[in-house]
Amino acid sequence: MTALPQLLSLLHLASPALPIGGFSYSQGLEAAIDCGMVRDADSAERWIRDNLLSVQSQCEAPLWLLLHRAWQAGDLAAVRHWNDWFHATRETAELRLETEQMGWSLARLLGQMGWGDLALRDGLAALAPACLPTAFAAACVALQVEEGDGLAAYCFNWAENQVAAALKAVPLGQVAGQHILRRLHATVLATVAEAQRRAGAEPPLLSTFSPMLGLLSARHETQYSRLFRS
Image (cartoon, rainbow, N blue to C red; front, side):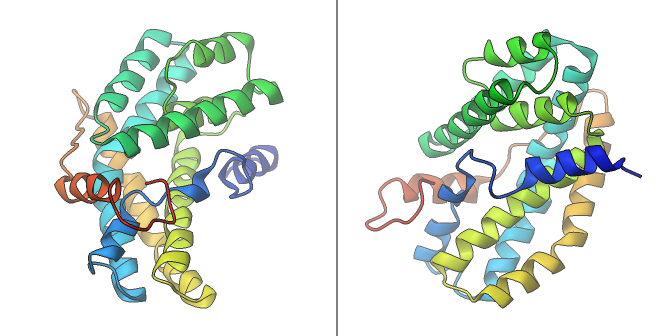
């Protein structure tokens, strides 16, 4: 069971109030709405669940675990390797901007808050750019949050931002959004379990195959009217 100080730290990190700008991105959801793939609560829930079970569980979530383990071991070479690998997999300018901006904001906040030891903070500051999963994993290590708990919070925060984007762009009512988020609990847990399996393989089983996300993200860049930055 997570100790109470670590639980509070985790709630702090996963809070929508954390000033890293997650509210301003939809990761292709807005383009999916624009072309009619997402049009109501059911299709929004399906979109978010499918992305958790594919994009997150096959790539970003296991990569997050590898980064957390590298930070925990003080292996800055491994941190840099996986950070650069993840950055290279971002298929569009928008997806790169998102992870760079949010990662930079969280890295800066970590330094301002004095979280973690100097070696961790300096290692994070030396990355150019520091991607979001890299910075979030570093913050969890700095605050002594275990990897499973940290990854669950990371995935839930991603889902929560997607639901918030759907509320504005579909649009949906607040209660509909809460129903979606509650039903996604099991999907978040399944994502964590699959990520642990993939990160534990040798070599790690990472897949970046998500052509629809890449196409919709590219389409969003030239979309006539937009609410979000991605």
